[in-house]
Length: 182
Image (tube, rainbow, N blue to C red; front, side, top):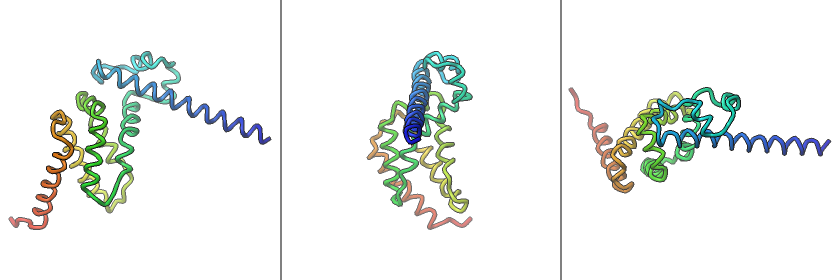
């Protein structure tokens, strides 16, 4: 009996690894196709052919190409969605460094007007209802600031961006603490 359980566990682990490789092949195929073809022009058939997988296997895992993109984004952004400290500036710097180290990927998304998927992923995090509005405000600031940086070719260094963030947040804090009465 013990031997059969070990075999079953080994088979399940092998199947899991095989599925992970399959998904990675699909993800890589989509990214490679996006290098030369606009996202809107890529068909599932193109991805299937590029990845070298069967149509039925593809549709067991993905319904449409946006599902693949969401998978990629979840994977690529998991390190900074999980990195959350009480230090606002450390969080901002972590995001900038993450984008800097994945520059090509984020530029590819921006080129294809697909960055909205990132904001959707950020906003889908499970946050208490009481903190939701604050969370959405931060996500909007981070998303728009980073998108602007990416679209401008990331010419400013992370340190320069951090100086801008510190100045901007200081200015915002000052305005919030001294509201103008109309």
